Image 1 (cartoon, rainbow, N blue to C red):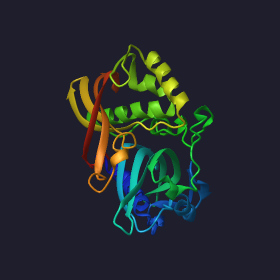
Image 2 (tube, rainbow, N blue to C red):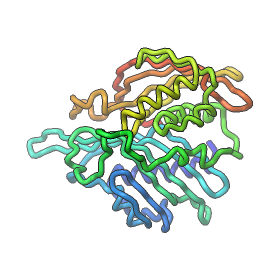
Image 3 (tube, helix red, strand yellow):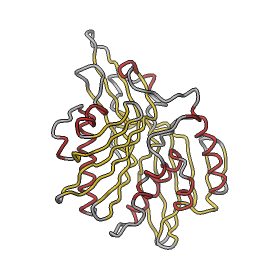
Length: 316
């Protein structure tokens, strides 16, 4: 892995640990003093103190957590970088009788970073809450999306904030496997952000999708775009979280397997002491890619329903 990328990702890892533990001490190590931040549930602010105010967990103390960082995409150019990722957090406590109570949520982060005096730090934070489940009273003061009029909802993160639009060209070397993984995570970004121009960059025009989840067969990128417009119209914020399982590269052709992580749809009704640590997958994806003019593009996708809980192993 490129050393600059490793350092940028370590900043993201430390930032997510601070959110997970609700401990924002020493933020200045990884956050610029003039940082700006905006959260769809708590508002916006400037400066290090604002970061703690916007992202502190307001629920009961003490608590325990399970956290996943997935769909991690990162690029840099000279002294600036952009990274996006999905954060899935589950908080739980025990009451006086030892009963298990939980709340979980999933959201998308975009972090802009800059290198100052040889050290990468976060200069801008954007966050959109995409779903929430369980004992939501713990976060009763959060501003929730309006699920009754999803077409009127304007998320904090816009398609222009994507990693690929912020840093369109990579001047450093990347392996084919790294490029393929980025392409697959951008496939999820297209779905959630409605960046249909990006779909033309990461997939071929005659894209084929065998959609066993929605029982349909799609024969072009244009047809897939129309389908995505429909599902986005019905929900204020989508959250397609994937974990890449494997990639097999043969010259200018590759095959990849990934699974969709969706703990709010499966398992939520029975989450307890015995299984809170599991990752809940709802779908497997088989993808074929081709290398076209030095860029990997998706040619076929097959979605297969597969409900499968596994012990937690974060995808980033």
